[in-house]
Image 1 (cartoon, rainbow, N blue to C red):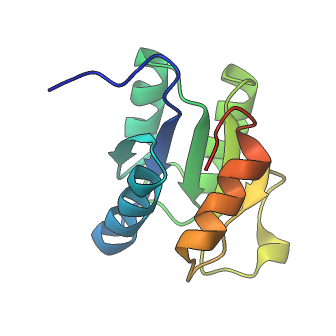
Image 2: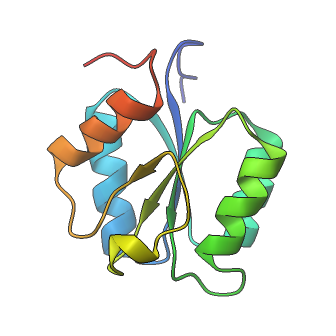
Length: 123
């Protein structure tokens, strides 16, 4: 498999729902991003320890470590990585993050998150 170009925007999706993870992958890939999808916070930690990501999209309701804990851990360990929260919960319950992507989301909302969190991304 061909590696993405150095300037490719790299996205880490942390989502335990296969349908939601697939939708996020599809939207970000259509936007030209390289996407890594994991289904737990623990897998996310391993992923971001192995490679740089420009943006992490984190579901709040995860098995094991929840999204609130992961968002805090990621921001303290990888401050250059933007964090977007996605959830069915009310956005007022989201932790402080760089962006919010309430469910259900659209391709346009995903692109808006890219514009606001990864300045070098271009449509």
